[in-house]
Length: 341
Image 1 (spheres, rainbow, N blue to C red):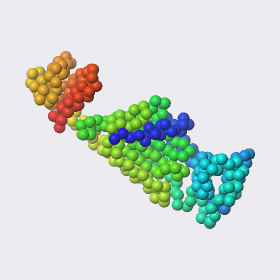
Image 2 (image 1 turned 90 degrees about the vertical axis):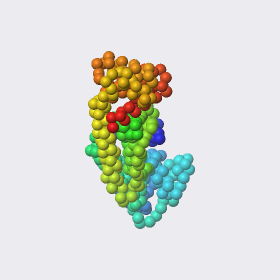
Image 3 (image 1 turned 90 degrees about the horizontal axis):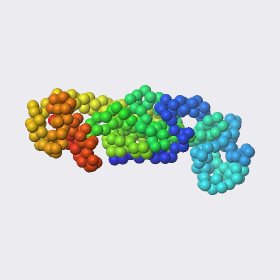
Image 4 (image 1 turned 45 degrees about the horizontal axis):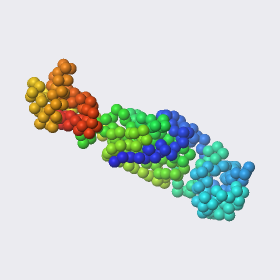
């Protein structure tokens, strides 16, 4: 399958939401957490008002705060009014609408503020998971992983905005064989401190990432998600275990691949060119290509080992003018490695 999650993130993110490295992303999220405060207040303590023709929300005795797009949408939902309708009103009229429609009751609301802005509003059942805590785990346990090659606009696959976080990472040296083809491991991780989306991870093996950050030919996709309820902090340990399982499988396959290559270097296909050419013909290698590969192996001064012959065939396959012929020749050459198992 082809995975498009990272591509969708690429096209919806603004430049100020993009980061060059996991470290710079963590520093940003850590600083944002340090500037954020959870304030618990009953609904009656939330007073919508206007200041300089802008809607603001007074939070008990803590002062008046501006609203961003997400917290404004949450306030509309809490009051049971349509966001599109309120957006058409003046700030003064909107504040009066909210004062007449805000819920009552004694259960406190959780208001997350950052400096002079309300980032989110939630009830008592919501439990926050900080992006910085999730990123600390990734920095500790995903040390071999890096952002993918940069997209056409320079994006790295690492994003954080006012509503959510998204991380796309791959292991560029983790190539190993799965079902006779080469795959490298990668993963997506996402979260929202303000309730926009669940926390989760998706791990996979892939063959290629294009400049639109579409992951092509993904296999062995494993996904885990959890809502922001009382048990959400346990998701960090579960995401870590899923990534560790991806790493363990990568290491096992890499070790197996190394053993195959070692055997291929030690396995002699024959004593002379005619003997090896006959063996290659039985394996479906075109006679002209086989003969040229053996000549190239001889020119290099190498023995007719499985590895040297496969390497020569692979090099010659790249020189074929037709893409279909190149792929066919490359696959047949790679299939010869089964002789070393």
